[in-house]
Image (cartoon, rainbow over all chains, first blue to last red; front, side):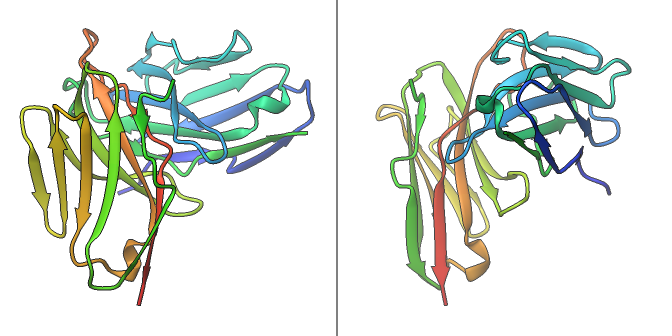
Length: 116
Length: 115
């Protein structure tokens, strides 16, 4: 079946521009996660949704970052007034349900954002 | 403050031999540990996991060992194959009231298996 998909795969933005990154999770998956992966680093947690509810946004670096999942399926990560330090790969992951901390997360291919 | 550390950025082994990837963590609240494998231009793929109540979990060629007292885990791949060449990330998850898996990743180890 289809895995997690993300679009666009690559995005180049000029500093100060707003960007929107889309994530289509695996159908029926309740949980959705966003991660940021800087060059040479591991992914870092940004935010978590359970259905349409954003239960944890502690990893969002600033108030320029905003995520939503209004209907509990597709999610959008929006970055306002992009800065060069926002350049990274943004990964989305989904898992079937909220079975404690043992539920496997399935990752999408990521969106590589470059801010000039 | 790097809570999950992979001190070897790269590892080279010959096909058929054992690959051992290491990971150390500092947060004693972590109680679930995972290894992910990542090919270029793809997202991480789950490989194997272990709960803190165990010290070993095996799945085919892959075995993860956990030493809680040393806050150390390792991934053994036997025998190694060229298709195993990828970046391997160690990840850990603490117990949280919300019950979801809040992964903390290491920086990764690039494994190269040569024929």
